[in-house]
Image (cartoon, rainbow, N blue to C red; front, top):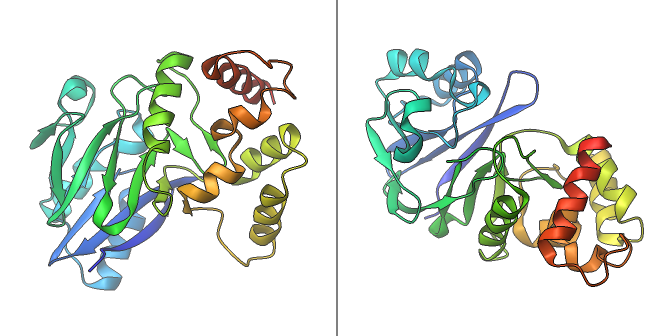
Length: 248
């Protein structure tokens, strides 16, 4: 059976994700201990694993408190271990691991940071993408290049369309406004924004198919002409969009 998942709102706009099944519970990223522990307690769950996507403080700062409270083991990218809390389970991109006894693929999604990973659980159609591919957007390029992020988005875009994209922040309002500014004729985008505003559906998580239809950073081919880059490579169109979003 597919694993159960819960989005836990933390800090100002972070999402942490609890995944439960096969007698185990895992957490993807650890922004804030109190709401995560409260959610665990309300469901009578322990915590077996904390899987970290990248080293930014708002994704790792609650690890020590959560480990102390639950005894969970910590997983993260071995190649970025110097910037992460102590790892019990170092992993590397390209490996297949297990989360709640389900196979999970570790995907290199560097760009926002170098060493950022995502976790794809094909059996449950879940992808925990943190600050790489996000609802209606993508993360800023703090460490990596446009080429690096475009390659990362392309790897994620190759996953099955029914995959739920579980990202690390609720940036839906700003991302949606930017998307509409560069893709105003996109009826699927307008419908998604209207449905979210009316409470008919959450902005996140959304399927990869929905992101393909509405996320400008996955629609470079459709937007190339309107951006005045009819013959530019995809990565150049992506770089233009990212620069526009940074200034938006």
